[in-house]
Image 1 (tube, helix red, strand yellow):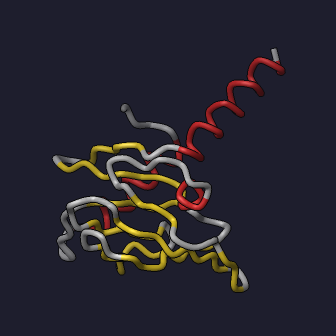
Image 2: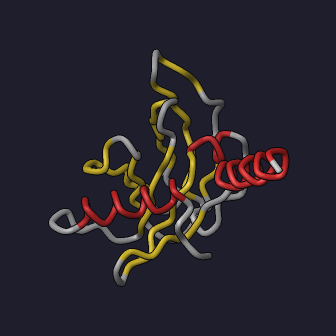
Length: 134
């Protein structure tokens, strides 16, 4: 029984590492993923973020230069700092920075500073606990 439970936990953790998952909070869809998935070259639809350099580490911070290969502007929030997004315009190259202890990222195509923080936090927490539907 323990082996079956442990196998399910491992499969669940692995599936969260490599996917971009839509998470609905209120009337808005957010896309939540781990930054490591981009660094590993995993597909990130609908984001279409492509690594252009290797990942580097400076102390506790990890950095990866990526390109937004989509036709929309994405606002990508680090799970540790949900108030200042990385803004990626179409075809723009920019560094994503995150901590190794919390590589969760939340992405959206619209950003309203007045109402966003609680919803971003909810989306990240829903994703972390696996309480979302795809």
